[in-house]
Length: 291
Length: 328
Image (tube, rainbow over all chains, first blue to last red; front, side):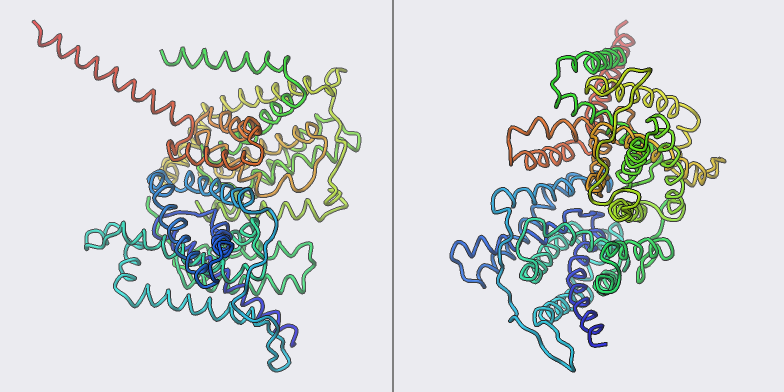
């Protein structure tokens, strides 16, 4: 039982990370129909900004700050202006392919200009375990869970509790009507890209101490974020969170109890089942179809 | 005018494909054969995606199915022709089944179902060692002989691939011009209207998947003897995404799109090899630049150019007409 609980808690920590990445993914989809195949690489990159800053003898906190600024500027602003804006009118697929190329570009650039080796990355949390009722929980996981949940709650407050957030939701749900009502739709879309830039930097900060900084870090993460977003409901932020947590737990349980060979199949089967039986996702609303 | 030019271009391209390889080295032939093989798979995907509008991220898995089918049968002494027939049948049948989710879900949801299928197929290739020899893969896939002529030399096998590509091209040309082809386009443009006009959208959706997948499997069956070694990492999601890229970059829904797209995806990286570790960086930049410049792909550029010239010619004709009316 203790082992089972430990696995579930570790799964929740992984899931909270998936959720962070999936929320950003969902935001981009909602406001601009961008399927970002480079989302995993977006998480991989900010850690290298921070590492480069630390190599330039900046203290850790300043490096983190710089990482966040660069991430929102490059992965948020520049990504939207240079790649998304010119292609937005031409449908989902060309843009999806362009983000695939972008993912190769980011990966290869880090490999060529920084290092092909894994580099250690300082952790915010102390090492070691917390022993609670006979269950050992790594401090690392606790930190991940707390920070990720705080971030998601903060984001939820921003979206539902502030005027800007409500305008962002309006811009996502019905751009035409939002525009008529005086919502600056273009600026709201830009905000979601900036938020995504900050979210991936946060995810990067949390995940890199666990996996080390390596140019391939994004590969599995991007796919996991997709699956989490779809399982939860592509058009709901709550859905992305639920999907992320569920996927994290299922993933970790599968790693423990299912043969290692077919471990990777479990999330896929979950994905197929959800899409076929509840296409809108567990918490999603069905999208209206325009004929 | 433009049709005469395009005919000339096609003749030149065909001449190049037949004559140039005589001067090619081993590696050049290998790359060109790879182009022919991948073009077949991309044509299949273009049928599913470009004509019928059904997004599939599983084409790479079908190439894998075809490749394993050919590798297993030919290493057990069967002729390649039998393996090709079986690969086509298998691709058609599995593709038909994969089409069923497309009846329920569309667009990005469909993309993700097929993505999951592609990952599952990879796991089966890797784990079912009794059938696929697991991670070691199947080595020494023999090349066939045709009418007693062995296709072992690269040049001969290249011509064989080119011949199959030509057959597929002719068959595809017939298909897209037939009522079937028009039904596929109707399915893409407006499924609701197609249904109300009596097109059996259900059957055509399944058919679009089945035919596209069968071509994927055919491409795989040619790939196995070309490379000689069939192993799981060749058929991951990356291949599916790569094939999707070929279709989009070439020009989705255009007949010649896959040919150009495969050219970009197979040959361009090779031409950039002199850049060594920078070649993938430049390659991905070029792909992004091309898509930003023309989101409808390479053919889109040509198409835009032709439309512009026609508009100009038409307005010139109009101007001279109105001038001739006003003159007297």
